[in-house]
Image (cartoon, rainbow, N blue to C red; front, top):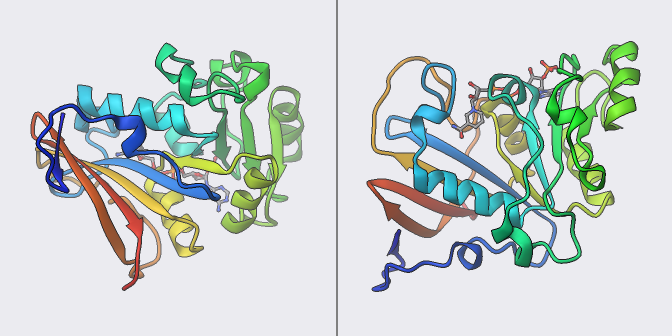
Length: 241
Ligand SMILES: NC(=O)c1ccc[n+]([C@@H]2O[C@H](COP(=O)([O-])OP(=O)(O)OC[C@H]3O[C@@H](n4cnc5c(N)ncnc54)[C@H](OP(=O)(O)O)[C@@H]3O)[C@@H](O)[C@H]2O)c1
């Protein structure tokens, strides 16, 4: 992988330094999109990804205190708990070996018998972020296996959800989408950073873009662009318009 912006002669980039979190509560969104803006192909993100993208994805998880995802992403992408990696060890001193997954859901239509709930490390139990309107029986069932956070009445309020994670000491938040969750986080002013992989393909179809929510302009400041096999790895911070 090489860094093409800011210009850099070496091919040897240190991903964990390039993606280090700033020393303040922070919410980073990491997504992959095709060159024509689609965030899924045939319903999944996998067809847009690459070996290098999976490497970046892994490093970003290793750096995070918690991985936040919408329930549709958890269901369609078959989320399990994040699996610890040897390379994460130096990144996670004084933290559990892998970050917990926090799922945002109203319906709580989640596979409570699946690995996300049955296989999570007790130090990184899965977190379910839901609202008062969620079915009470499912909430009770989820509470047997996961930490349930109620952060809203009819829907999860994104500011409250992010605040609840921070109250637990989970201040380095990595949001892995999907677009509907991203759209609400953006509308609530909660996104500090966007890490976007642009894959060298166009796919057409009706896939959502990175934000699927109300229209609004959020200025971004480009931090870097890395490249491998034609895939671009961009990092933007929220900036001025
Ligand atoms: N390209 C990428 O990097 C990438 C990354 C992630 C996902 N994806 C793709 O994106 C698609 C899924 O994304 P999506 O945008 O459709 O859905 P999503 O954002 O992953 O999840 C939407 C779901 O989250 C819950 N939710 C969202 N906001 C809520 C709120 N305010 N209160 C309560 N619950 C809330 C609801 O769950 P309930 O229905 O359970 O109530 C809702 O159905 C998949 O095809 C996936 O493959 C792509």
